[in-house]
Image (cartoon, rainbow, N blue to C red; front, side):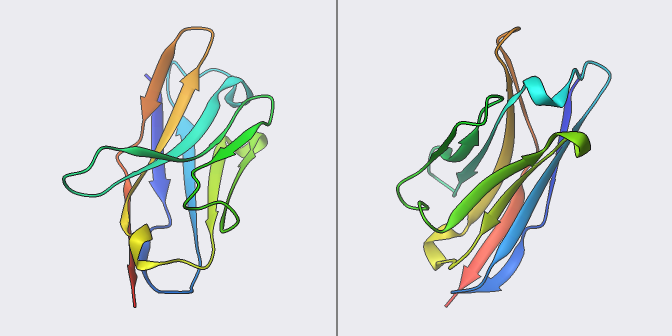
Length: 120
């Protein structure tokens, strides 16, 4: 098994910042550097959508709504991926999920999510 544990969510005023973390571990866990990592978010009644992704070869992609405000990064030595969120808006309120994709086994893994609430 591969486990992903998110942390860093919380309540923040609009314009503020948060940093989410996701640590990957588990009995089936291979080298962290091989995984393509991503952050998704979901609000009730809506489908889960991509926020940012960072591949094993360090290519990034961002949703248009967060471009310029959010930054995804990874620390391979710590098996951790981060989402740095600045200039937060109420519409960023959601549960944020970490995702790991192993392109050699075509398997992906999800964390349980961390709630981010932005108030105005």
